[in-house]
Length: 515
Image (tube, rainbow, N blue to C red):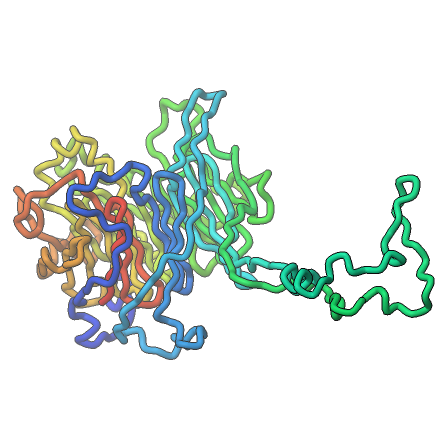
């Protein structure tokens, strides 16, 4: 691979790989009817596919976690088909069904700080499965919980000795001889001796034909969610990220100033590996906004800051990672600084590509793709909603400028996606030579507002070898000339790990699309 970003993912791509995907509506869960008022607690706040893509979890502001299970990957016998041999490019219509839901978090109150802790789910991360059970981590602002979801069989006792109807018909009730009835002497129940050597009087004519041992049989199954561990009292500030390590044993949690390392089996202690809190809080210049482990190297992780930088750290260097291995940040263009520069530069989300070579970051206006072997600047920049730049004053006054949009990459790393306003989201091609920049709407007709804007290579900024600026530059409306709506925003979305399939959260509705 060249450090300039050419051949970013593969040396050659077919025309089909470079052409824009045609997205189609797949499913919707929790669709609103016209005029229906959405409750605040029902708004989705987190989405996550598991490693196989067969399960999807969502969390909402009411502290609930809802699980969905894929159904089109199983044959009629209930066995999972071998999907590994199928080509990634084969278009299949994914189908999910509601599996179960459970209350993950409850509202709390911190009496020491007089602080109310919301039940809202900030992040969900799937853990490795074991013995047919599903495991996941969920967190609100202060507390992380480790959940196990497993099918439990409901067992019932059957084949009892007494059948009331037959006993009455055959006169079995009261048919035992007097010699076999127990007597009560001095409060102690004693059996009278049997005078006859024969035991025929125990089972008289017309009585019970034989004795049966009770048998326990399994009938229906039910899903049970059980909280295995609670990781609490380790963060003074709101938790913004959790991320599983590839070793399957540890995970990290990050708040504004610290990152802690946990062992899944130990809930009463954690190790502080990053601490950016200054001695004097007046000297604070940036906070941690997102953190994620490398997908394959268990010793590496990255975290982003409110100043638009990404730091790559190596846990082998020291116990407290107060220094970084690499720093990724874009150089400021002289004369371009304004009052909003630092605000819109804050990174709200970062994601590693599946191969671990690239990092995708989302700030308020753009998506940036970074190569971890090149820290001089991003290898590609995608404009998400450049038409909002003249409206930054309005966005600041209504606090929309502080919205935290998430981002995601496709499993093959050829495309990236993120959300915007008016319940829109954008998909960009990041392969060499790709001009894909598609605008879709979270509705049953996602292509209704589709806009294909060819990429325009911009002037080289400093030492940046290749910066692509894509998107419409309309100043009064959105990318298709429609008036934008700041109240409807698509903050959360997730890409299927192995297929071109997207799950998006629009308010309380979960929309799913495939290409």
